[in-house]
Amino acid sequence: MAADRITFDVTVRHLSPDGTKSGIEFTETSRPGMSVRELRQLLRALTKLAPTVEYPAEPSLRIEAPAGRFLVQVKAHQVQFISWSSSQSHPVTPPVDEMLRIFAGEAIEGELEVEETVAPTPGQPRRGNPKLGIGILIAVIVGINAFTFVNARKPPGNFLAPHKLVTGPAASQALEAAAGRYETGSRNGDRAIVLGKDGNVEWLKYGNDRAVVQRQSFTVQMAESKGSPALLTNRQTLITIKDPITLVYFGDTYTRVVK
Image (cartoon, rainbow, N blue to C red; front, top):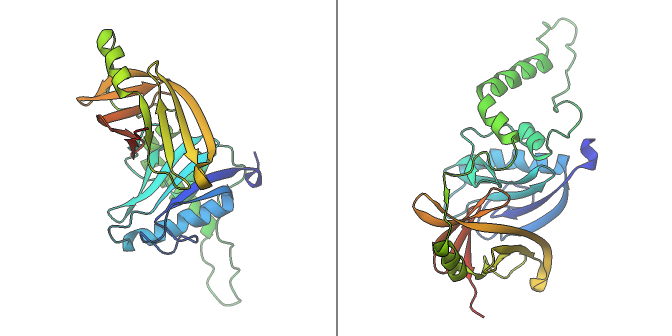
């Protein structure tokens, strides 16, 4: 697929529109339909900004892409790349162009962008081909991070945390107790989980005035992960039950809404 046909729905948090400034005054905003070029520029700006980010700002990009959903965020002055399908970070963050290829599911045609070669003026020594140098550098990076890249391209669930299913009456009782509506908030860009006693789930994303702009349906089974109760989805992702009123999904905290 040509790069100009690929778009991404991006939610930006604690980051200025051009990605050059961070701060909690930059509230969460949605930027649907971003092009490859626009997202590349934003990712490069975030990478450059990362060493200067100061707490409590935690800039992040939640990206809904052809290959799935992903999170790119700044933690401890470093950019972290997280698979939205697993909520676990990769050991080494891929370069920006490699991240774009992962987001697009290898669908971007053409080579990575490189600087144009400038012809030397008469009398100047001829320098090596910068495209060749960049190509070698990329090859080295890909070789070092081969494990990361290969696993990033595998189907969702390859980084799923260790867990075991809970069955029988105990599972039914736990699921019934957990059933309800949970929300991250009620503003534009916030999300909700509506968990039914039968294990059917609806994930919602809000626009202005709590209008539902995105809806996904899936099912869950009771499970246990790292000593905590959890919900294993049919998409091979985990929702952690932190306490009777709190769920954690892809690093986001959802609080029970009493109605």
